[in-house]
Length: 196
Image 1 (cartoon, rainbow, N blue to C red):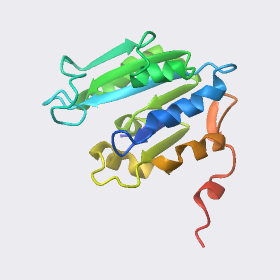
Image 2 (cartoon, rainbow, N blue to C red):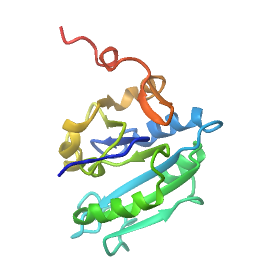
Image 3 (cartoon, one colour):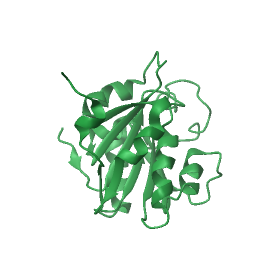
Image 4 (cartoon, helix red, strand yellow):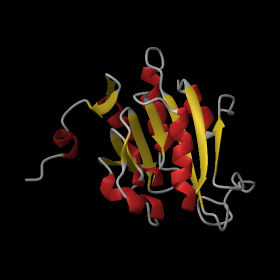
């Protein structure tokens, strides 16, 4: 399946829970808050059999999920939630898409309908990268990650950069939002190092 190009989107995924994905998102949002509107999106892909993104018992947040998807405006999310942290960091609007893993295309269609092409979007997601080609796709990985999420392995080859969780703030100055596009502040080669 061909991925849909979505200019103006930065997508951040992770190899596991508590990897620093939202920390990186918030660090990128803070310097933009005073002069650049950015919509933050959190995508939670749910296993239809267990109603859990982890495919198990989980935390219970998705326990009442049913149907193909649920798209919520998280304007008043408490700050202890990831969506609340994104709002506190300066996102102009925060959306949370919960979507059944086997209905991802329907969830993306619903999300796409409320986004404006060219709007600056910072999206936390893994599987959505199989359908959408953002300006940049970053994956955050803890150095001690032993059992990466299957969704991360599915999109790993698509990533522009894999970032160690203990170095997420080092990358903030390297990522810019210029003329509505997320890009590297310096050539990618200097971030990755020499291959010689």
